[in-house]
Length: 211
Image (cartoon, rainbow, N blue to C red; front, side, top):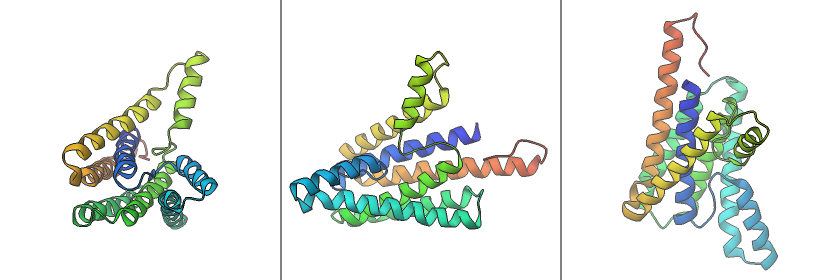
C-alpha cells in the first residue's frame, strides 16, 4: 500500500507538471519524451527552429534528470527517500521562480523536465512508470481482453495522472501562479508517505520491507 500511494502521488504530480509545461511553458511535455521527439522531428522537417527549441530543451532536461538521479543510485542502489527529496527541492524552486519570472519559460521547462526525469528514475525503483502511461494502459487493456482482470494498480496510476492534469488545468485557468506549488505539495506528500513507511519498518523489523 505504501508503494501504491507513493506511485499515485507521483503520477498526479506528473499530470500537474505536464499540463503546466504544455499550456504555459512552450508546448512541450516535461515528462513524455515520445511526444517531444515527434514534435522535434516535425520541426526538423519544416525547418522551424521556434518549434524545435521547447521539445529539445525538455528532452535535454529529462535526460539530465534521469542521468543525475541514476548516478545517485550507483551509490545508494535501493534508496528512494533521498531522490524523492531531491525532486521536491527542484519543484519547490520552480514554485518560487514561476511567479517571479513567468516569462522565463525555457529555463522553467528545463527545470520541470529535470524533475520528471528524476521522478522517472525513482519510479523505476518502485517498478512502475509515473510519467509515461502508454505501457500501463497497454498492460491493463491486455489483461482485460485476455480475461486476466483489470489491474487496480493501473487504474490508480491512470486516474491519478488524469486528476493531476485536471487540477493543474483548473489552477492554470484561475490561479496559475500556484500550479508548480501544487506539484510540490504532491511530491512532498510522497516524501511523507515514504518516511512514514520507513519509520514503521524500523519500528517493526520483522515486518515487510517498505519500497
